[in-house]
Length: 233
Image (tube, rainbow, N blue to C red; front, side, top):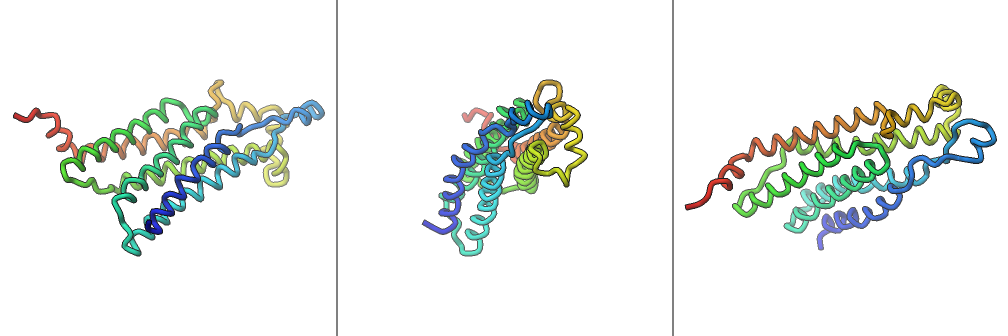
């Protein structure tokens, strides 16, 4: 097995550990502190920090295995199949957990997953016709935006949780005043949906870029779909 493929398999092996830490509550209220001070307080989000570190490490291996495969001529059919599969498993795992944790709207994640399934199916059809769909710049931008969006959302929760736990008293004194005045939960949970305006914007950016990327793939390869819709005589 090539070094590039070993790196890809390492990324897949990291996903269960990422899911374990990412599925832990991002916010854990410190009941004892609240009862004593009558202020909103959280435990430091250690599990979320670990999840972010694992996600960043796994995302870096995506770049690393591609670099190694190209530099040392280790491009294989196995790598072509497993590498994008590992990417989708990692990103979709994070997005699905965001829905459970009220960090993203469920319909957004459904649209994103639908795009991935549609383009993957298109690639299978193209492969059966002996045609390889070249990666487009919109697809690369989509991947970067999705990974970047996941990282930003995790950083958001980590910073809010750290501020609520008192770990950032000096650096975020103004934010702590908001927590002290009871505004903190309103800042985090808006309209009962568990999403702040900032998270909503991030979710929209990820969703719209993903939709446009899917549209670009379909537009450039529409002939595959059109030919497949015509019944052969």
